[in-house]
Image (cartoon, rainbow, N blue to C red):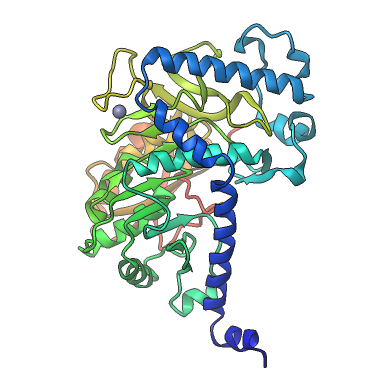
Length: 450
Ligand SMILES: [Zn+2]
């Protein structure tokens, strides 16, 4: 028997961990090589620039990006004579899925290929240039460094990779380790009450300084810990949520159990520009990553609504006025943040515009509004509203023993206030709620929307 076979037989877990370590280190070289350092300096230089310097740099970058796009993308070549951004058409997900070849400016083998999760049903692919990947990572690292993070500090990840098997979890394994970079990747598919002890033990023993990943997963773990009166001994410094909108309830429970700062960000795998939370707790648009046009239902500029994004670091698959499907609410212009940054402030990131329940009498109820109905109700760990008919919803609730009959009827009442009298609400307390294929958790599953 060879050494490899011998090791494999003894400890497939160890071998897999080593493989992950090597693969991660390779990825790290791509992301942090080339122009990465140059971009770190660039973002650091502009972090305390004046408003006029920022505005002029933003104009330069927009012009460069649009000029490059019309010159090298077949899709955008008809707009060579553009005068301003408004001359460009909106870009839809459907366009990217059906016309990727015409939109892209790079060959697949020279690009970094990115697949985005299929939350809308269709999986989507975009091509990044290596330079753009380095720029995006430089900005993320610049942002995380404000909270003390750098690669090599112990970090726990909770993201959508299906990294462990049913066999693993039965053996008490809920993670994979990258030994070189000191990252522990936790599975987000197996966080259940029955597996809680396995997770909590692995988490406490690892004692991460930082956490990156899905807020719903970290929240679930924390809510289960809270219902057992557990708190972390080694405090976590910061949690960087990704991929989902972080809700007020997530923030509250995670902060109280882990004792950490929560540093939110808005970005997307197809390459949207960034919104980043500063150390004073405000969300700032980063104007050198792109343009956010906030529009109402008639696509007129508004204070609150869907966003059209134009993203400078998407030269491989140019995103110009891309209707990404997320909503934000801007803060009034005169609101200056005490952190001193002149970057525009966003009041809230409202997340996916398509996550709502349609009601017979009250119209569309957005999921942020729905999650607010748990205020003042004890015992709820996680819940999901499923709609298959206009006048009926199913509400699945994961709860602890405090969610008694009184709390249940309070919760039902709060929901019916939002959904209106004509909606029949069927509530079920369950042990587990199935996650999306992407590993994300969705509060609302609307199966009747057009
Ligand atoms: Zn600020």
